[in-house]
Length: 149
Image (cartoon, rainbow, N blue to C red; front, side, top):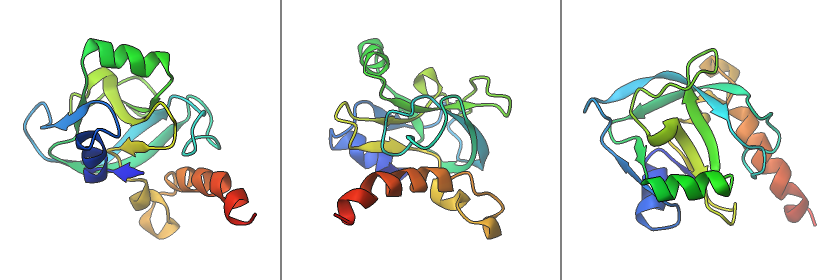
């Protein structure tokens, strides 16, 4: 799992397709955003509902996910798009200019995933947001049978 710069590293290492580049307005963005769960066929989203809107913080200057038309076609065909940026009502919207409003993806083996938003900063009541907790609970429920075997 790669979050923010970790997502960048996974792409640069070739473990995930595409790249992360400067935001389209060339500005650092630090704020809460919304993202929509696009698939539940992954370790990180299997406890979520497809179409579920999650509020997450972002903090990046190089958070714009880019891929070419063929790469986007492959991501869609293989159901690898985990999250897309939206507004509060779920309409696609990306302040950073990401290709197809993509906020997170997985590899075709579904065992490597990356995202720009920070679920770890939205996982405790004291932080004022627990939407990120659903992602960590998904991961835990997927691996706990393996750990406890």
